[in-house]
Length: 247
Length: 295
Image (cartoon, rainbow over all chains, first blue to last red; front, top):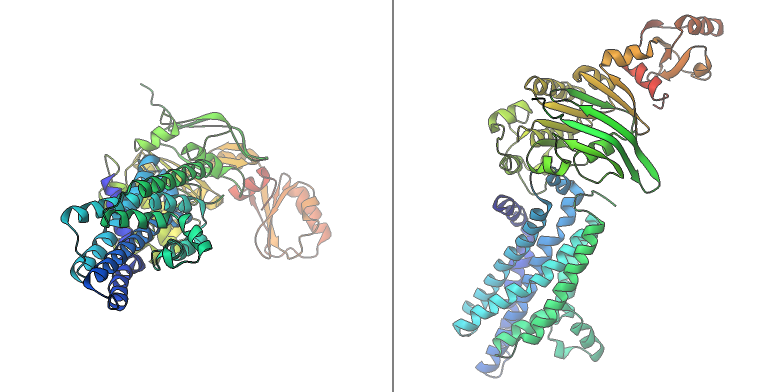
């Protein structure tokens, strides 16, 4: 399975858009918005709070974009006939699916790590070593919900819709989930919408870790989303085998 | 000990919704044969091939590949396949794809020789998006061969190739047969079946309508061809003896069971028959006769 994993990872990382939108852009946003808005902070404690929350939001934004981008591409491989080709190789179908999930999980890491490094060394975010580790671990595991969502969309969408989804979905999820603008600035109705977004609970998970709150509630909701997406992906997958080119 | 056949299809029926693509088809292919599945589009060739590869479960009937069920045969590296709707991954180099696939088999074809045999020297560093249609087909053939599988299943392998590429491809297929591979290929190119296969299975309407060597299939019709230049084809199919009307452009080819009667009728009706030629039926005529001249 390692051979296929390395092969697939190399393919995704070859696309410069992928690196731009999931690593570079969140990292630049982290610096830019923290410098612009953090500068208006009344005191260093308020700056810390701002820099920390914004870093967490951008880690989430980058990670969910990476998870979705790496997995929705499944649709391209079906359209090109590559999934069908894999099906006539000595390679169990289960391995092909497992590798796609693994690719999604692995590619979340650069986004998380780069934004965390930028937060720590450019914006001077201060966290205990333990908190850094728990934050990275929690957001890495939490990204599983978005890998599941990406697999579902990769299976369900046609090539063109999938291409559009990669570009739009992470932006929509990030915006409505309060990763760009904090949810407490939202009007009431939109706050309800935000709470229906997995991205909101993903952000909550990260904020709970850095503020020393309990991440259990957010983790539970995210796990629920992950289960829901996985069940839907399995349902779509059984109705529409991976190797089917169309229909 | 007798070897299990390369492919043993019994009573295969494939239905898609309301339409039946394959009806109770039986096909036994011993090892070492090169077999053309010949038929017009929609004859059931691809459905038969896909069932043999385990890509879907047939509605009824059984398929055994190398004595095992198709999925197991594919899993264990017994089969190499070139699919009609198969494809290459984007954002990858040809050489990377080849190495990935070859690495999956216990006994891969040596890379340099594989690349030379399939005519893709110089393409291994190329991105898959940069290949022409014919080059893609040859890379897909290389993928099918990468594991030196005993059974090769090729579905319309030359569909995107020009004449030159097609001839090179035939030479490759003949050399594979010489090496002892069993090759089963679906095609609607009659010249291809004639040039490569030592057995031709004509499929139409989901059934086998003829099976034998190209010569046997031709002689089974025991017909002749009357060929001449003509632009107006009306009434030709009603002439005595005529079983099918073929040919391209201004050239008409009549398959007939009674060349003399056909000629008499033609001469009575027309002043001129430019470029007239009468000869034994080609495989194309046999094919047209068997499949009701659907082309």
